[in-house]
Image (cartoon, rainbow, N blue to C red; front, side):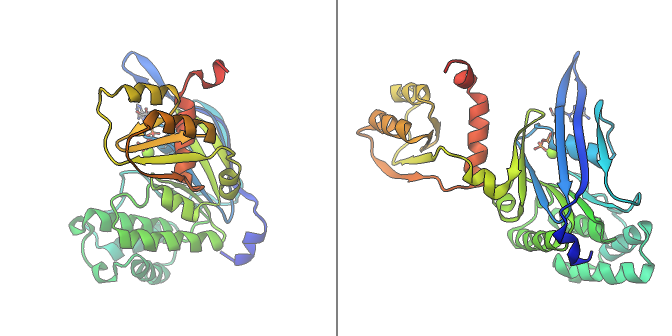
Amino acid sequence: MHPSVRSSPSPALWARGLRKRYPQGKSWIEALKGVDLELRQGEILTLLGPNGAGKTTLVKILAGLVEPDEGRVELLREGQGTWLGAVLEGNRNLYWRLSALENLIYFGTLRGVAPKEARRRGLELLEVIGLQNKAHQTVGTLSRGQQQRVALAAALVHDPPVLFLDEPTLGVDLEAQEAIRSWLLKLGIDGKAILLTTHQLDLAEAVANRVAILLEGEVALEGETQKVLQGSPRAVYRIELALLLDEGDLRLGRLQALGAEVEGRVVRIVGEETLWEVLRVLDPLPIDRVERESLSLAGLFWRVLRERRKPCSSGST
Ligand SMILES: Nc1ncnc2c1ncn2[C@@H]1O[C@H](COP(=O)(O)OP(=O)(O)OP(=O)(O)O)[C@@H](O)[C@H]1O
Ligand SMILES: [Mg+2]
């Protein structure tokens, strides 16, 4: 893509009112309850959410692999078939008996790239993912993380303007994660529209221009990464105890009543007033440290989750 695409952040696709339910036993599970989403050129939109939130369902609907019960997806670009590159969850989508390079050439030509060019791009991509020495090895004999990396290369071999990456770093080692991270940043700068789902909040924070948090089939929060981080007015505090509280410790109930979340030796609280009350409850237990959690996606994500799980927070006050 030409870099000038970046200056006009026009939408690459949008979706409105997506609903999807699946049969579950004798009833239904609502995987998506009316989701709106827009993906723009030159942006990396990261979709976050706990297991079962509906992320993969959403990605599959956007990719045209699953039919929504309601709602519409519109692709704002000419051309069919080759507009998208995708790495879908748990599906490494490769031919096991072909070599890594053969797979890339195959998928490239399938999507309209001339064989010679597909080979050149294939070799280039193998180098980016650090697998040039495995180019001629059959994919079936590669490790899981290596296969995942080849799948990522296969999604990119035809240089599509839109990329859907559903947990692309799953099972991939640290070094490759780093490579993928800088590669994603470069792709965003190149003007591609990237929809990324991940459970790695540090990766999300490093690459995402925009984030959307999906909870139980609904978008709980959406916005530009910097804005959503700055726009969270109430600080989260993290207290690290020097020892573990006993299960039967009466303080646990009092902490919970204050809205604190206890996880091992870590106690998390929203808001400064609560911090002091919690410290009074903990007094005189030894404490290793108290800190204000920095503005991170991890903190924000945790807060959104917690606010949703506290059923009385909106009703009783
Ligand atoms: N084919 C299916 N049949 C029945 N239920 C399904 C199907 N696909 C998804 N679901 C259900 O829909 C809900 C959303 O699933 P989905 O895979 O979209 O979640 P996710 O956000 O991708 O989770 P994860 O983080 O674990 O990948 C889950 O409750 C899941 O069990
Ligand atoms: Mg998923």
